[in-house]
Image (cartoon, rainbow, N blue to C red; front, side, top):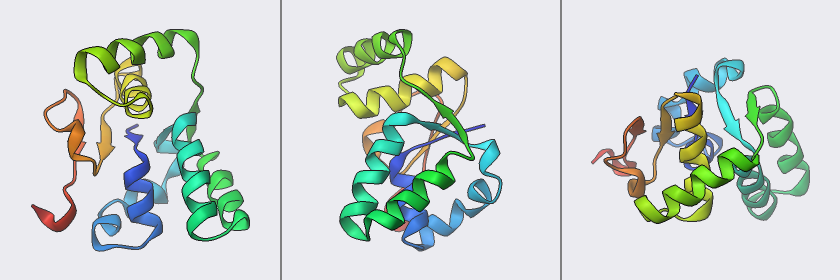
Length: 126
């Protein structure tokens, strides 16, 4: 089960060509892992870009995935990743979740490039 980063969700929700590549993951949401920080980022983005009601629907959909709460162990691993990999806090939490679960991280964000277990889908096909 891959960990699905916020960037992937946004591409999919916007129905972009890149997002279409991820459609199979969302067709079987029980096979995706979603950190709670991704739920926060999605709720914020969808409420801002679409509506509060749409945000509620997206979060309800994410709850059909394997949702991983931020606990102390994950927080401490993310703190280490902030320092060692120079990741922003939310990115470190997402990446720590993938590492803790032994899962790939699927993302469109280039700042994850070169990290172990990251499947990077570049915007613009580059």
